[in-house]
Amino acid sequence: MKPYKNKINRIRTFALSLIFIGVVIMYIGIFFRSNQFIMLAFMVLGVLAIVGSTVVYAWIGLLSTKAIQIICPSCGKQTKMLGRVDMCGHCREPLTLDPSLEGKEFDEAYNRPKKKENKK
Image 1 (cartoon, rainbow, N blue to C red):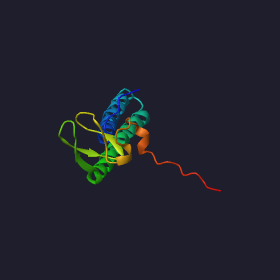
Image 2 (cartoon, rainbow, N blue to C red):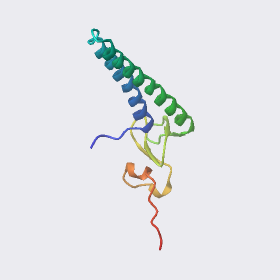
Image 3 (cartoon, one colour):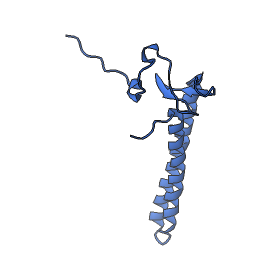
Image 4 (tube, helix red, strand yellow):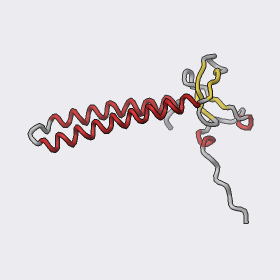
């Protein structure tokens, strides 16, 4: 299982990778200079990936302003927390503000809403 990271940092890493993917797609388009339509298609796809990255960066920026700022009890640095459980962005200490989850082993599933069972 891959190590869990802070949600905000994971989304920012995804947005950064979209930029590099877009540049690589546009670079591949250079190899098709003889066929302008294929080259144009690669250039447009690359620009769309970069525009998608801009949208993701704007979205995570808005989420980041609404995130709860807390001081990590382990490293003492200020970090932002999304959801019921998250990791410290600096030292990867599991964090929660929910008293019912104190002392329990970290599980990302705590952030997913529980399905309500229909009572008949």
